[in-house]
Length: 359
Image (cartoon, rainbow, N blue to C red; front, side, top):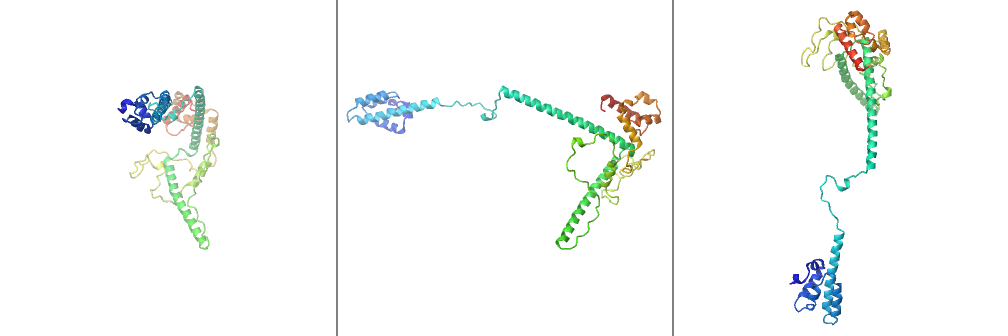
């Protein structure tokens, strides 16, 4: 009976006390039973019905029923307005799933996009300019190193990679002993100072330690002239293990003209015997030459004059004798050691580099 008399929207939106009042009105024989059908059946905005009900119920007996009906009508009207207000200000939620949050989505304008393109183009230009400069400097340093090695080879002969690696390992082992000796020396002197005793004298260094590099050299400070300086090898002699040092890794390898090809690390002896036609080593010891020789100066002048253009062709070189071929190739800086086939092979490689423009 209550649901048929009261509109559903009025009961749900009104204050909870209004529902109790509605049950009071719907009770048979109640004080507002006579006015309930006319007032409760009214529309939600019941202001005109409320005014009519107050005028019709001017007697004292109908006053409580009119007041109750007025309260119910006002509650229904307020609930209706509240629902309309909420509907007007509701937010439409987009339920589309995205990988980022809405506040992380950046939308750039056309002007910002063009500005970004311009900035990226300038950055790429600087990047490739730096890369070209790096390649240019690297090529200059490689050519300089190659020319220095050629001039050094004219003085001391080809490098002995096996002996150089052995000497470098001996220096590292001797360096460990020297560091331990200096640490012990500092400890003993500090201990004597704390006890009030005379300080023990400093010992003699077992090997000279290489100075630590403060910072890498600047590109403009690197020598790219390609001229060999004999003082380089003379300075390197100071940082070698003493001849009295005996390494636990084994004895030194034989001299260059006394050993053949190396064997595996677990084989004994470590080198094959020297071939019977091994050439004698007629070059001076490394570090004994203080000035460049005339042969180096001649090769240097020929290189500065454009010795690349003075290389003979392969057909012309094949018609020359070995002595003539060595005379022609010597000033150009090409290695003239070995037999005729070796010299022609080196000449062919030099001509190929000249054709490729790698000079």
